[in-house]
Length: 214
Image 1: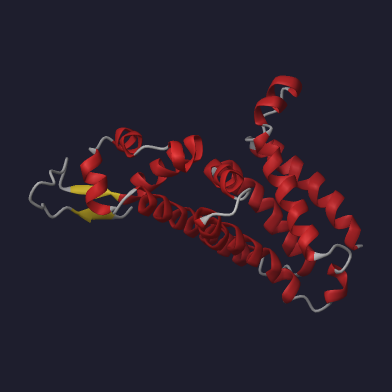
Image 2: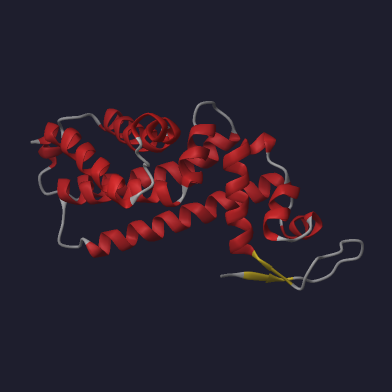
């Protein structure tokens, strides 16, 4: 975990000598994903990690800066996991590798629910936050999903569904599984956050979508 040494400034009291930035950024993600950017307050983040608001303000210029840094932090964790999956499946390529990425995307959404919550909050309207989320959170995942396509020796196998439609279908099929969590649990007794149900959904989703490429 990373931490920042606190250098005291006149008029800017701090709560401790060090601030654990990893814990802080992950707490910020929870608050931003639950309340949205406009509704989130720094004091809620501070309360979650047991520090004062001035300590957060000492290291982050404002709420916008904290929001941006939390998105970058989340993106780094997701890309790190995608790199691991790529190495774990170095023997796969084309559709087989894309299926592995799709399965992992579901697991990542379950592990980091702030990802799909923030995407859904910001992707519906054009704003500076849309641009930032698109650049740092959505497009890196899309880029990884494109890798099996661009590196495939047989590009013809990917022509069944246009790329724009494919991206929309994949995002909808993955995120909706968790967005509907309360309904799935209340009506069907199914929690989308268990490994068993994630694997089942991944298998069904991959089977339905990638049959189009056969």
